[in-house]
Image 1 (cartoon, helix red, strand yellow):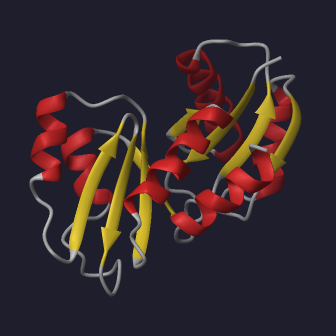
Image 2 (cartoon, rainbow, N blue to C red):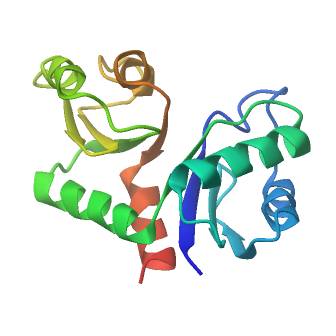
Amino acid sequence: MPTYLAFLRAINLGAKRKFPKDRIVAAVEGLGWTDVRTHINTGNVRFDCPLESRAEVEAALEEAFRTEAGFEVPTIVLTPAELREVAEQAAAYGHEGNHYVSFLKDEPPPEAVRALEERSTADAVARVGSRAVHLMLGESYRGASLTNATVEKRLGVATNRNLTVVRALVEKWCS
C-alpha cells in the first residue's frame, strides 16, 4: 500500500484555525487509512492508503479535514521519495542561512517559475524544483522580500516549512 506525506496549510494560526494533531489523526484514520503519524503541531502527517492518485488523496483528505476541523484545510501531498528529493535539492544549494521550503499543490508553469526566480536578491533567493520552492533568506523570514505569500501569489496554493522540519521528516519518515 502506498505511503504518503501530507502538509496542511494554515492550521493552528490564531484562535479560529485550531486543528490539533489528535483530530488530524482521527480524520485520516476515519478514511480507513493506516499507520497514521504526525510530526509537531503544524500539519505534517504520514499515512498509508490504497489510493494511487495524488489528486484523489488530496481531495479525500481535504474533505475529511473540512468535516473534522469545520473549515477548509488546503492539503499538499508528497511521496517519501519526493520529500527526499526536496532535501537533496536543499543540500545542493548549500545555503547556510534561513532556508524554507514552500510545497506547491500543483507544478507551476515555466514562465511563472522564471518570474518568481527573477525576484531573487542578494538577501532572498528563490529556486523552484518541481513542486517545491526553496526560499533562502538572510537574517529573518519576517520582512523578507520572498515569502510563502509571494510564492502563492505567483505559483498557487502552497504551504511552508523550514528546512530543519523537512530534514527531520526525511529522517523520521523516509528512511
